[in-house]
Image (cartoon, rainbow, N blue to C red; front, side):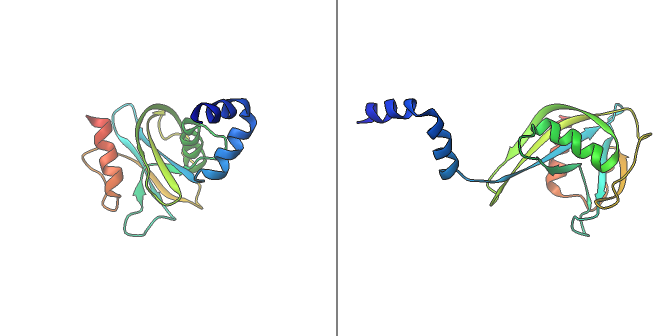
Length: 151
């Protein structure tokens, strides 16, 4: 019986993806970049839409349909700050959230803050911080991410 099911499964490729789509979870994907300058300082943003008690964090946003995660962080940094980054290694993936997964990448700031233009709808401030002089009001999860990069 299992051999018959396997044979039928292979014969109906177009149906496979539709069936998998119907029975699989649908979710959004948040992408965060731990962005560092050449001198080792990290780019932090004071987010307008984040909780007032912890507004500082790394550039973040949701992937668009069909967008590679690496491209998401490049786009988000550009949209929120006008700056350019080069994406490095994958740091971490978190799942278990209701309808969301989180993907975290290392990234390098290309150039300085010369081209800084904030999207004031989302970002109140952008600054480079020494890893050992992070501002209060930063989520613990983002502090932990920095430790993955500085090891």
